[in-house]
Image (tube, rainbow, N blue to C red):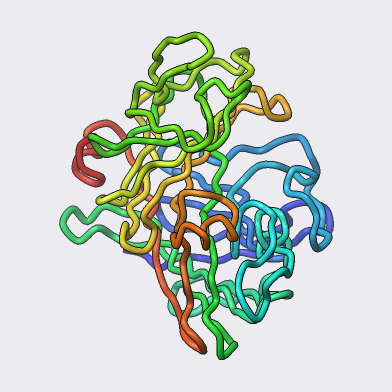
Length: 331
């Protein structure tokens, strides 16, 4: 495998970025915008997987709202996804911003050992969040893929609780399919007009029940943006950390992740309801909820030990057709 290249680019006027490329994939990152991944391209097909709105990129203001910015690409959510109060001593009551801190902070970056290293220090909480992007090959198939390797260092003498979620907003079209391991179940977290029932109502997958119509429908199939509906779901606890988004032409992007550390998958489906946008997010997560205080109450959040480090990784698997079974397994 040829060595990857790194090029300095301009993501937008006065917004510098980095283009990290291999023979197979191209990734663009904006360190000053919370390490945001603004582009992810399969060079074989030319497909851009990440969504892009018409809203200009601009520097973030700390404690701002996620929806006040561009609402596209892939962001990192840490130490929570939904705003709320930190639940435990010695930071009890300190506010965790919307979608966490790290997406709104400028990150440092280095290119070493053929990896793009990016990192950021917390503001209200004493941690260092690091992500390393590398191009790898699956040993059994010599198939190329992208690895996101993470570590969080706790700089304090106290345990640090957190919720983490990867937050990629993918371009979609009607007929795309969300694929999960067989026998997976999901719970509703939020849905337009409460169509999927009260929060945490359990549904089988892929067929969920619209309680307002007393009717089942196949939720794994993406409908038209004219539907004007949106839903946030979570899987129940996973035994296998894998999922995929398959396009009508057979191309796919999927994730492999350690279910022991990221035991849930958040699923955000927006068919034109939220800001008239059309996208899907598959979000490997430490919790089945977005608020840290709720996750702490459920004893279902991540914890970095005092002066310790927690690590995990997410593999991005991209391919076409029958390659899915070889690289991600059957669904």
